[in-house]
Length: 235
Image 1 (cartoon, rainbow, N blue to C red):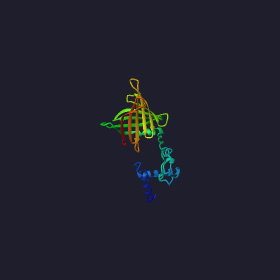
Image 2: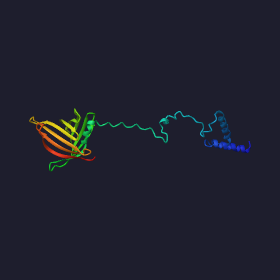
Image 3: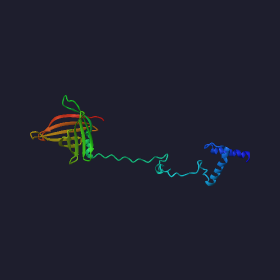
Image 4: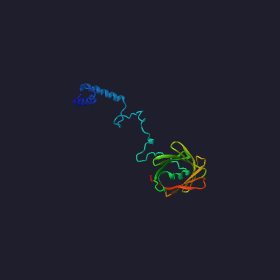
């Protein structure tokens, strides 16, 4: 063996075993070279196009891989989300009742009277009920229930006190901008007393209402006991 070949063998041996064990280079070089030659004869040639050796398929590599069909392509919009379900339409019979929703400042025409603040918080319950919590000056007075009557513009109403006491069924008739709420009750002596409240709404958004309260002993002859006006407050 000439001197240059011995140098090349020595350099190869150092690169092959130096990271593993500390052994004399001159004694280990022939063994390492023989092992390398035997491995090259038994193993198929490596894929030289891959610097890290042949491509070995990992059977687990596709388990967490995203589905290409559902992966957005750069520069294209992603899958559109399903639109929310449409809001249910308000039944026609409820539309005029909603004029009274919100907060009103009500002032009687009686001299020296103070204005009151009245708020009606309303909602539809099922398909046949419309209910409003009526609050006067911060105190809940009653829950008002409305159901459609036997003809267009006719309603039955019921007021329930916070104690749970129902005050009886009344009639409400709506014609245009005018509401007429009728009530009939029996007095302690058995006589009947009739009450009627007239509400006339004005303004572009029905934000002004003029009211008149009337009483009758026979339902035919009426006397006015109170009048006033209400102004709807902006939310």
